[in-house]
Image 1 (cartoon, rainbow, N blue to C red):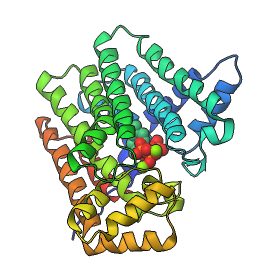
Image 2 (tube, rainbow, N blue to C red; image 1 turned 135 degrees about the vertical axis):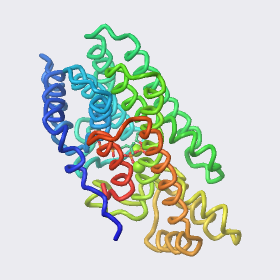
Image 3 (cartoon, helix red, strand yellow; image 1 turned 45 degrees about the vertical axis):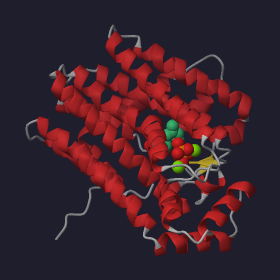
Image 4 (cartoon, rainbow, N blue to C red; image 1 turned 180 degrees about the vertical axis):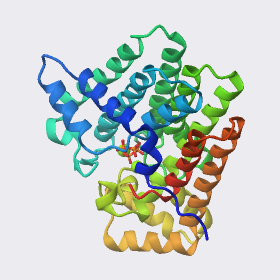
Length: 330
Ligand code: IPE
Ligand code: IPE
Ligand code: MG
Ligand code: MG
């Protein structure tokens, strides 16, 4: 019998105390005399994010033999960066909900949210600079810039039903995979592992990130809105043509799917009939399966480099994460 994937809480059990510490760091660094900052900071912090990026960093640090307290700081830094991304991303995508609640801009408006995002970005770098590890700060800047490039490149492709699979992968590598890769690599840097092992960790996180984003995009078709924390079909309404649709548009040649996709993008809304027709097309052409297989491929690619490390409970925890990513519903 196949083993069923572990739940996130089980995988994170060995680092639970560290993750709690990350949350305290998060809260500490949104303290300010300007009340809005701790107020919104707390709103975000308690909204139920999965903390996958800090967890990857903490687990990679452990695997690398690091036992000091700097891992918690950098884990808080990457959660700050991720959070800044999300609050800005929801303005750009005009997403009203995030994690099942009002997105920050829906509650406080765009002006405040832009500044709050800026605050989180700069704060993250200030936090990273509290230690003399310029190599880590450089790495954080690199992956954050990649992420912004990904968001910008995605915007230039917004509403483009002719986007190619390669262009789409270019977007998801930048907007998601580099940061995941950076998280794992920082763990290795802290543990002062060999450069081969550091690259192995980076490779792990990078491929995990691609699988993570493909599944995120799949959940927009197959998920449960309650679990996902926002309405389904959001991506297409926002003008984002993701992997299942790219596959469908490539496979179907009678023009029906293409016409629906273009109509939904143009009207920024999908009727129940349009959505049902698209889902039927995705089924007919096995497009969901295709995207899922691509995610599986990257999840497998994530695991391989970890064998550059000897067997350990830490390695097992990191190996369990790609399977979780494939099975996640939120
Ligand atoms: C959402 O990331 C953005 C993507 C890269 C898909 P998460 O799914 O990690 O968001 P939270 O922090 O758990 O809400
Ligand atoms: C979130 O991307 C931001 C980044 C990954 C940089 P998406 O727009 O794809 O994620 P959701 O669907 O809003 O969480
Ligand atoms: Mg978005
Ligand atoms: Mg999404």
